[in-house]
Image 1 (cartoon, one colour):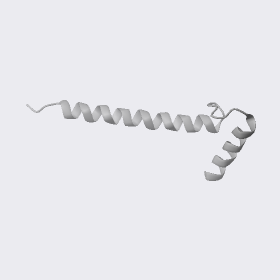
Image 2 (cartoon, rainbow, N blue to C red; image 1 turned 135 degrees about the vertical axis):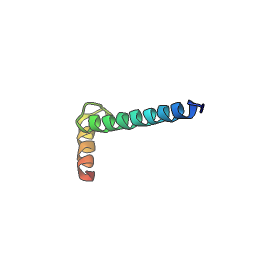
Image 3 (tube, rainbow, N blue to C red; image 1 turned 120 degrees about the horizontal axis):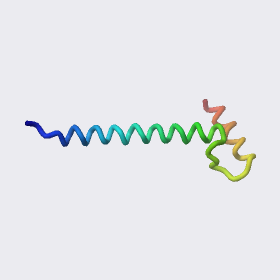
Image 4 (cartoon, one colour; image 1 turned 45 degrees about the horizontal axis):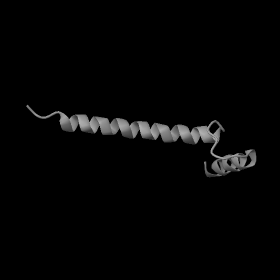
Length: 56
């Protein structure tokens, strides 16, 4: 009988990779719509949103 440890390790690493991608995606979306404030004042938040709009 083969060992199931490599399968479990690969499934766990795929789960962690998937969750980290979702986390970064939610941070980017949250910062774009102003849900996650990365900056202190409103002007720099608008400048960040404008810069993201230029990139996208």
